[in-house]
Figure (cartoon, rainbow, N blue to C red):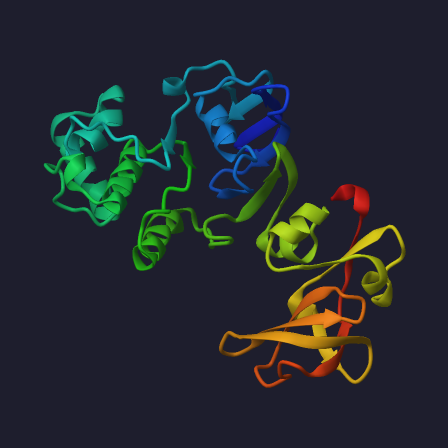
Length: 315
């Protein structure tokens, strides 16, 4: 095991129909891994397993070379920010942020300085005496983030922590917090992205890898825009029977010859436009092209610059 955080065969079964795992994944020191997947795919469960709020049925969790599978949350040195804040309503902002510092023996002036530093980091300087109910949703989320950062955890777990921030503050918070790890944003936060589907880990890779070289049909359709083509239209694009074709809109282009189609809709986006076309076989596809490439009602031909293929069984 070479990762700073390692999940080795981690599995959690909630019922006969709801199972997460087995998950095998390694995360390097200083790396930011984003979990991406539809609701119910297991993202929050994986975070809770790492933090120690849930125990795996099988497998091991290793952090910094230490097997923490059976350790309680307090001994794992993980900071977790929940989607719904989980602030202590009876404590003011300063006491909320200082809560984890007390367990480390940080008190008095040192605690006051640390609280002030992390509140400034999340643009809440001077809010120490405010109560949670006096704050907006975005401010409460930032307090929760400051509370997790204050003890300087060795692993920071974020369950959609920026979802309630306005766009400008979201970008600022990302830069201020994550630039200390010398990481670039990919799919909002991660250097790599782990794509989950129904409790299974479909693929782990960079944003480019997931978009250009998806391992499964699910990843191809979940990450970015994709045209999924079957039957006669797929065969017209050179795909054999029994396979599903996936073509990105920017990988289709209008041409003098090729697949015949009718332009049904045009959606202007500025530098380009999305054209919804209906092929002679009845399939609907999106084409990304110049704003003046075609008009609604035009009969056109399109050709695919690149087609990705997957077996039907992998859907």
